[in-house]
Image 1: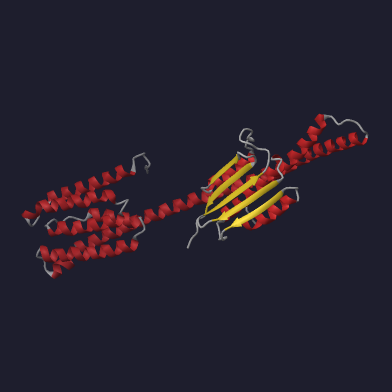
Image 2 (image 1 turned 180 degrees about the horizontal axis):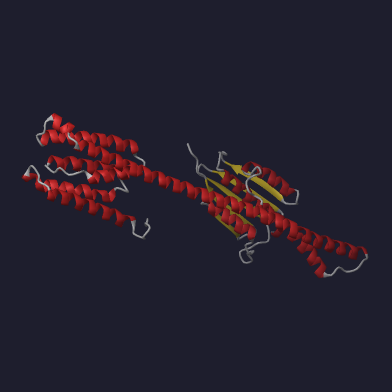
Length: 375
C-alpha cells in the first residue's frame, strides 16, 4: 500500500481529504441562506456528496471531476451559493494525473453551467448572471488548482526521471566494476595458473621421456591446471559479457554444434517451427543454454552423442539437449556453476528449466522461454 511521508496509507489520506472538504461545504451551506427552503435536504446531500466523492480521486480522477461538477451545479440550483471547493480539488487531481485538456474543457463547461443555473433557478438577469464579479474569482481559483496540479505532476515526473537516472548510473558502475574484476583476474590469476599448468606438463613429459613412473599427484596437478584454465576463461568471458560485442543467438547455434563435433562428440541439431524475431535477451539465452549444455556433455558426461532440439512456437522457444552419458537417476551429478547460471538466466526471463538424468541413462536439459512479440 502506498504510504506518505508519515506512514499514512494513501486510502486514509484520500478519505481524510474527502471528509474534510465535505464538512467544509456543508458548514458553509449551513452558515448561509438558501433561496428555496424545500430544497435544503437535497442541497446538503449534494454538498456532502461532492466532497465525499474525492475519496476516489486517485483511482478515477475523471469520474470524480464529473461528479463534483454535477454536484456543484446541483446545489447551486437548490439555492446554495457555495464555492465549488470539491471541484477545485478534483481539477487538481485530474491535472496531476495528466488529464489537462479534459480538465480545461470541463472547467469551462462548469463555469457556463453555473452562470446558466443562476439565470434559470435564482431569477437573475442575463447581465447579473454572466457579469457578476464572482465569476472572476471562480476562474482565479480554477487557474490556481490547475497550476498546483501541473506543478506537482512535473515534480513527480522529475523525481521519476531522477530515480531512473540513478538506476542507470548504478548499472553502469556495476558493469565497470565487473570489467575491472575481469581485468584483475586476468592479470593476477591467468599467468600463475598457466605457469602451474606448463610446469606440471613439462614434469610429466620429462618423466615419461626418462621412463620413470609419473606420480599420481603430478597427474592430478596437470589435470587441475587444465580444468582451472578452462573455468577461468569461461568466467572471464561471462564477466566481460557487457553486450558491447555482437551478441550470439539462435542463428549461431548451428556453428556451435559443428564446433562440438571437432571435440569428438557426435552432435545433431533439429530446429522445428518457423523462426520469428525474438527479443535479444531470449536470443542470447538460447545460445548460452545450448553452449553450456554441450560444454557439460563434453567435459563431464563421458558421452559420445548429443542431440539438440529447438522448437519455435508462436509464444515460446523450447530447447532440449540429450546425451548418452553415464548419468542415471541413482547417480545424478551435482549441479555446477554452469547449470546454476543457466537456471538464473531462464528464471530472469520468466521461463522454466529442468536438468536431470533419464531413466534409461544419459542427461537431459530442457528449457522453455516465453516470447512476447508486438504486432
